[in-house]
Length: 573
Ligand SMILES: C=C(OP(=O)(O)O)C(=O)O
Ligand SMILES: [Mg+2]
Image (tube, rainbow, N blue to C red; front, side, top):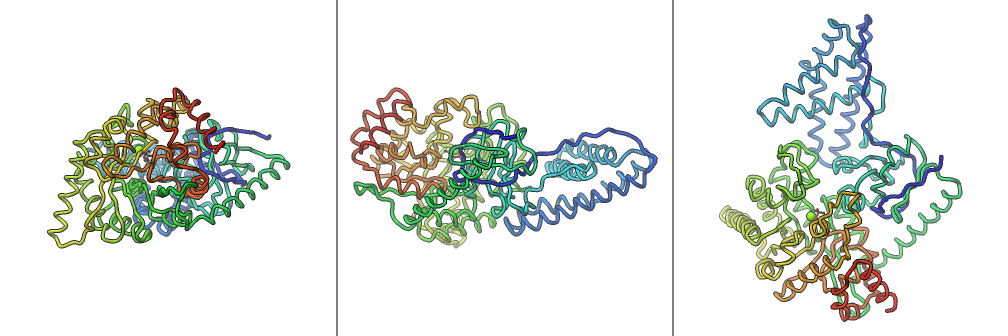
């Protein structure tokens, strides 16, 4: 049946391929007893064998793609599968209690999980999570249901999921995964951000795509408009193939500006930088014409693993990014954990309002044993390129002063150890909390730069969760409240001779770009794929013309008025 769904256009492009459902299968079963215990033991052994083969493959694949560290979790899973202390009791249970293999796996693993979960030792509690993961896989094979292995996809597919975690996304093979569609999420959810850095089309927030699609259904993802079509008609297929080609042609046009500076029609110059999450993203940033990295989100180094990354591992990652970027500026943001970015191994308390809770700089200032190695790694890497350091979620000047104090302390330590550190590393902050945007003038005297994080600034200013569909109508980037805060930050920076950038998604939004240009933003940092369209758009805009209407713009009452005004202004230019 032909089904049309609407969602949020999260990453541009058109994908046409078979659906691959990335959902945990139903693992319920009926507990019955059996006389044929041999058959059940052999069923268990077979399921273990298939699971081992799969995990070996996933481990190898992850090692090649993401490095040994990320693959360590799968070695741990393999150890569990080979552990006689876990497996023998399962077999004994089948023999003595005459239960089927599924019952034996469930009961024995639950016993171990309960035991480990109740231990007063974090390492052991993590093992409980590992056993849970592994036994799900074994159980699926016993019950004969498909267990998704995104890392092993080897044909062209579109991924369908309720949501994609950063570690799911990291496992996806760009060669085969043509796009994805999810039930939940918004343009600034991390799955959407990852899709843009992988340069695959994505539609998120469709509400019920997982229920509307079956494995292998033919599906079209339109990441330009936010549409998904299941079982397309021949006509629809033809239309979308044309659209796909037109988009590819447009990209070729944009590519001509790859090595050009970003200059407006009236000769003003701004910088277009890329947001990246891993050293692997640098190639895409450069290939899309980035003049720098405006935001390196370091949290991905800390996620999807079983322990904190070492100083050495971090140093290698930062050095790699800096070296690849040459003399172009690279703004690295220190750890911004919390909110929707969790670290399983840190055992942080569950909070009622995680976005207002113990996250980012708040966490780092209280956990210097986590913060200092990152700062040391950054300072050591600074010798290899043009590094700028940025602290996330700064709400007060004291926080900035404390964070900078620790940074300078580590700089001294390194100097005493005779380790080379770059001389003039700029130290700036994310402006993503309204208190900081309002008092930007005071901050501007002490920071070297600002980078406005509108993803969070909008949610905190409008009191509208950036992940919550029901309040997404309040998530208004062009609302006069946001524009006045942005303007305040830019003016404050310029008064002190500092620069102001933006690394929230708003910086790459074609409606926002003329406004931000007119307000005087110096640096626009965005998903790599937005850079060339933005450069093309900026080359047709006149900064002076928009700036001359700044006061009118800031005095508007509603988002609609702003959008209408800017549309008139730009189109009549
Ligand atoms: C860039 C931002 O940070 P993140 O999306 O990682 O919270 C932001 O808040 O705008
Ligand atoms: Mg943020």
